[in-house]
Length: 205
Image 1 (tube, rainbow, N blue to C red):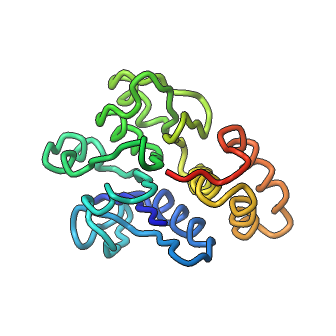
Image 2: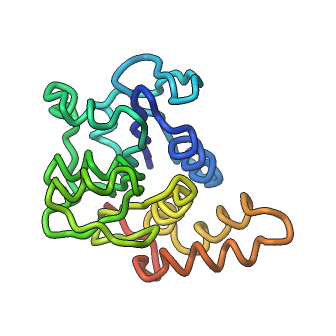
């Protein structure tokens, strides 16, 4: 099972790396989590440099994709050549977007008729793209999910784990990363957001 986290120049570390850490709590054969970028290296909004694991084209073949956020998202959606590499299909893969990543899904036409979550800075741009923005941290419709706010990134990761490996695995992942003494609270809050969008058993995409 391959999960790709799209990470562009100027990326937000919290969005890409929290999801990376939570998703990698799943320790099963064949489970792989990759940073996917348009170049071999990308620099974050705060100067952290990451090496890409896979290309954007390879990410389009992943079982699940998270579109990360950052300060350069409007430049990304204005780049026709880059956007053309993003060949996503919710009929065959899970798609998730974090904060300004929601704008990418909107511009790809993957949020038509579907409300979405995003951060407050990106909200007007997503609305201009014709998408209703919800005042909540997480929402999913079918195989497409969106989250708003950097610290909502673990909701996307837990949703993907829940969809692909089941609710028990999602709970275990959140419980592991939650602060000591607050683990039950964190699990309860996370599952309260994502459980309505999960089924009782893993879903194959």
